[in-house]
Length: 328
Image 1 (cartoon, rainbow, N blue to C red):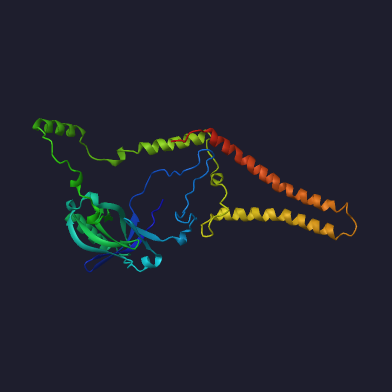
Image 2: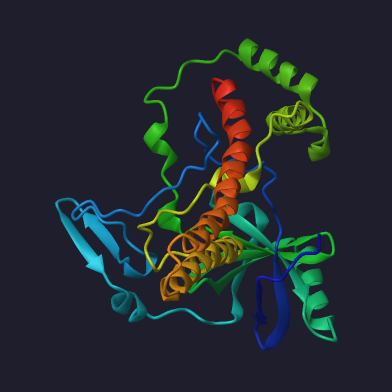
């Protein structure tokens, strides 16, 4: 799957300007799971409900708030818009430091930087400089309207931008350090070092795998082979009648409901036309019952359709309830 740039800007290196594009350097391999009702497999929805008035709240009616002990300060959209949003498209190099001075605990998400110009010479110059001097470039940059701290380093033939936590976001390790260190003998140290030597080797990440995700994938595939699956569309059920107008509705679901509603109106209109025609006839009371009969016949397909829908959904419900406990 081709990578997509999430940010475009430039590195400001003194008077040198290096145009770059940023790409996410990592991705999550975990299998996405969602919650369903154990009886019928229906999806679980979470509502935005006000704890004061009890009403469901649309996203457009939400504000932010800061809780300070017994006080809560509400921040409106206007308040947030008044803050100075950082919109700079520049990665500003502020200093160069030895690689060992940056605590790994401070490192956050990583981004690959790709040269974004017809002449990548300026990009290659900075990359080679970092590589030859064995230093990191400390930078400031803006992402999602927030000013961030970061470092530039070299990986293979590209530069990597790594977000770095601010100093006050790193907790002091002394808070959990033992009050008194136990005495360790020289013999114990030698034996421990010997054990380390036995386990020592080069780190090769490909040798390790996420056994949990592998077994989870195998479990899912086994259930599919055994026919223990539900129709995904059926797990969503029908939307709530009192849903907020501001809620986002799936396009396919909206189209389907529109078509079903149109089909339901057609038999009703036919019945109404039949009754009107019967009323206009001067003296034909017995024949007048025929249009009503036609109207009743016209309604039968809708009943069959509903019955068919119940029949189709019934096996899913029986299967889900028969499975008993939740699957791991």
